[in-house]
Amino acid sequence: LKIRGSCFTPRQLLMRVLCSLACGAAVSQTVIPPPDTSQAPVVLALQGRSDAASGAYDALISQVQSEGVKAGVSVWAVTGPSFDDMKSAIQSTVSAHQAKLFYAGHGMGGAGEAAAQAAAGDSTAEGAILVAGFLPRDYRPDLQACKAKWGTQPTHKCPKGKGLPLCPGGYLPEGSHDCSATGIP
Image (tube, rainbow, N blue to C red; front, side, top):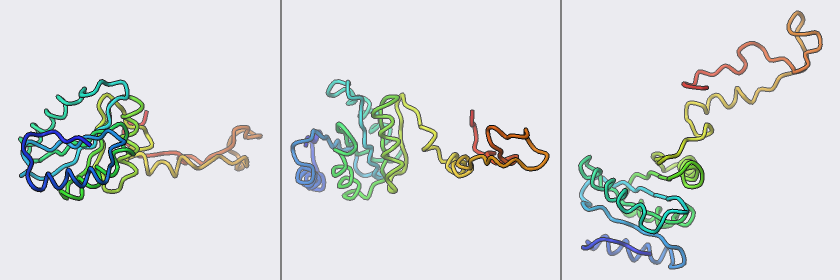
């Protein structure tokens, strides 16, 4: 476990020890404390692209932390090869600072998709930040209500006077799959 920063408060040193014990040395993880810890705490769990060089996200994290301070939040960044590998570091950082949690991932597949899955599967997460990624339909909140309607399958019984005499594709009553979600292509 690596922690970057020039000066550590007693709380940060305790966090360093706890993360070291909880995470072990086998998985490369980094907890990057914010430049100002006096603001409302936020944890940004970032999984980068697997082909990105070591340190590729340092400037991005630094900028996010600087902008966070301007917005009144202290952004604690946790990085690692996967959200599963970062799980204990994320949990201990969130717990130690009573922080809000955001998952972030870079890329169309891989880390971007992993961030969406991690945020959807973690009831404590405030959201997902996708860098050059997309949110799969399954995770869009406005489409969750539509899933039940879309699960309705056609019957092969044609009501009298509706459809072809044979109903080859089956029959659904008008409006069975209607959904009020926004922007459905």
